[in-house]
Length: 93
Image 1 (cartoon, rainbow, N blue to C red):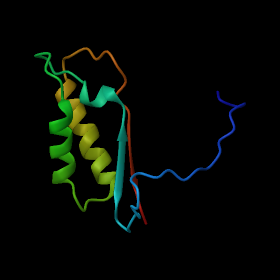
Image 2: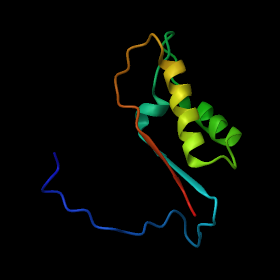
Image 3: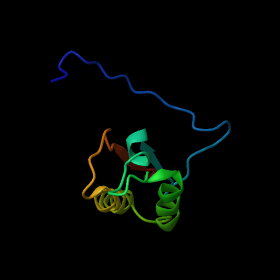
């Protein structure tokens, strides 16, 4: 599908002077996650996402991803979504 695409590894600074530590977790997401609507038309929102991630402190990336995926399925059940729901959870080892 993307046969002509060349990927170039890069290091991205998340914050000036920040050095990742073992067991840190990076969760990147598109706006479709926070803008996902439920059956009443209410957005999932940044606060719910922050709460979920705060509840997940110390959990492995796979568990956080599964929890977020499950929560998004529950939240959007019965509602038509108008954007992608894309996220990635990456653990620092």
